[in-house]
Image 1: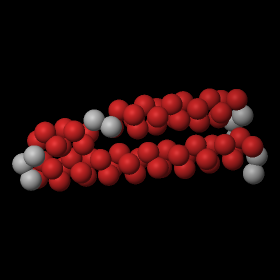
Image 2 (image 1 turned 90 degrees about the vertical axis):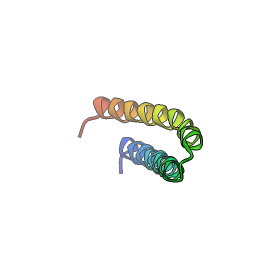
Image 3 (image 1 turned 60 degrees about the vertical axis):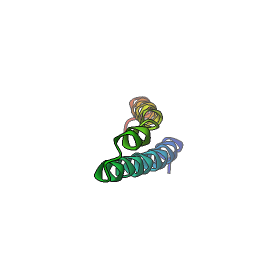
Length: 71
């Protein structure tokens, strides 16, 4: 596997971990709303910004790597 493919694979694995955390936080917020705890639900969503920003950065990195060395 080329170094570029290895880097892209590792970035995608990091993206998967962030996506899983996003789903966990979203599920937590949905559970809180189901129990009528709106403030808790909003609190559960607060850390999403960090994960979404990281996903966006990782996506930009993958695109940049692909532009430099397309298949």
